[in-house]
Each structure stands twice: as C-alpha cells, then as structure tokens.
Image 1 (cartoon, rainbow, N blue to C red):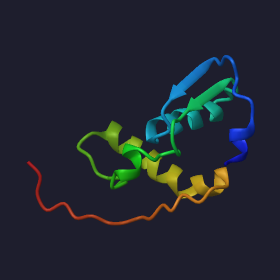
Image 2: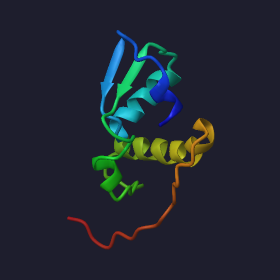
Image 3: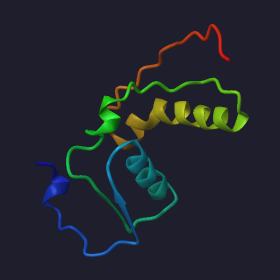
Length: 103
C-alpha cells in the first residue's frame, strides 16, 4: 500500500477529479503547476491502469492544424522531463513514424 493510502481523505476539495488516466492526471498536474492546492484525484485502481494503460501511447508530431501541432510540441517537451520533475520513472520512449499518404 502506498504512503498516500494511509493519509486521511479530505472531506471537501475545491476540485475533485474522477479518474487517474491520462486526462485526470494531466488535469491534476496542470492545476498543481498553476498553484492550486485544494484538489483531489479519485481513482478506483492504480493510476493509468484503465484505458490509458492499454493505449499505444504514440505522440504524433504532425498535423494539418498549427494549434494541434503546438499542443503536440508542448506534450513531447513535457514528457521528456516529466519523470525527473515528479521523481517517478515515466518510461517515455521517442519513436519515429513515416506518413506515406494522407487523404
């Protein structure tokens, strides 16, 4: 059992995030980076043990939309240093891809 499991669960919080997958953990991470401290993430199992665990985890770096490409760039930069920042190994591996045709 983790150290967090032995801590008292708060009776209230400004933000309650349901689900510890990619979206839930990202939401909590970014709220914490913005200075929010009264936030709770509720997960019934292990973090990222649901759909996120089974996803391929590919982070594409090309899109027809500049907005999407900027989000992709932000994500790849974040993932490169996230494990070191939070003190937990992320097992992030950079792989390549080839797009031959798209219609």
